[in-house]
Length: 398
Image 1 (cartoon, rainbow, N blue to C red):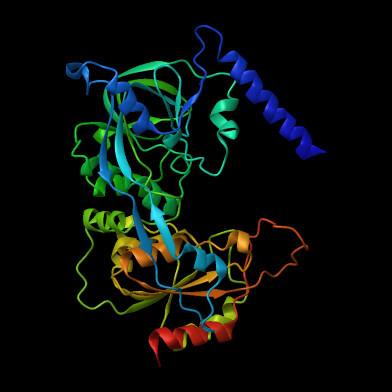
Image 2 (cartoon, rainbow, N blue to C red):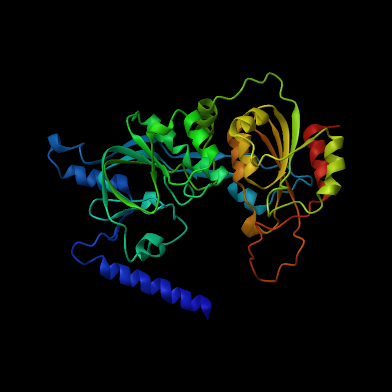
């Protein structure tokens, strides 16, 4: 009953929003553009030749490409169906869009034309049909503010949250799209609230704070709004983007990385290894150090992982630091067995850099109701010690 009521409420808001958008002077979104490149090409084609190139345009940066990943290593040699499905992925073509007098709406950073049409590429809502995009349920928008000059948006639903992995993989590489387009003179629109590591990452990539403009739950019209493509489905790591991040961040020189780390999650309130005490003797027999990276300064994390030989961890944001590890680093990830929460993002990251990736599936300590898909991805795991020992023996030998 509650779900039915919520559905009616959402539908009612969408209907009300669509009606309100038709009122003269309304600034609510009205319609969408599913393919900005096709739309801008058609728009330009209607203009006299000398008038083209000033208004709505885009710069192609990279063609679509297919990436094939080697199967993950497992103790029994089997390949989980979710991993098998992820072995081949087609990355979309990339471009930098220019929207003259483009509008930016809300902390999710949805981009609209001056006339109020939503650019589908800006929504990051690819799993939802357009009718369900949150932007079309708005009944009001903040007062419009005019912003002169050129600004590039890094905003999206995942950038608005201080998520370590999504910041590195889904957000920062969009700057590489602008650099590939050879567009350099712009301010960068960033989330209103950023953690220290987000600020440091921008500075280390060559974008100091005097180039930032912060944006929250606002509504701007930007004279020259630049929208860089998302690099692909969230969590799939484009190899050239990983190379760009590693080059720009400035990795320390490490002639012989030899350190082996087990990443603990003592400060985390979820997704912990329940039987960690059983695993510690095994890990120590392979000469692993027990580390906690939460709260560690970014520079220290970069330096630490640049010396890695092998990293073991339950699925978590700390593994995003594999970006800074030398190629051929061995990686063992503990994963939920529930297919709805088997996450292949670090499998993709390891493949992009050239790490050797292995997965060990655990079990959840609590019962799972039959026929349901409970939100287990934050739950703790019980990791089978034998599977861990066998996996480490394959990767490292004795």
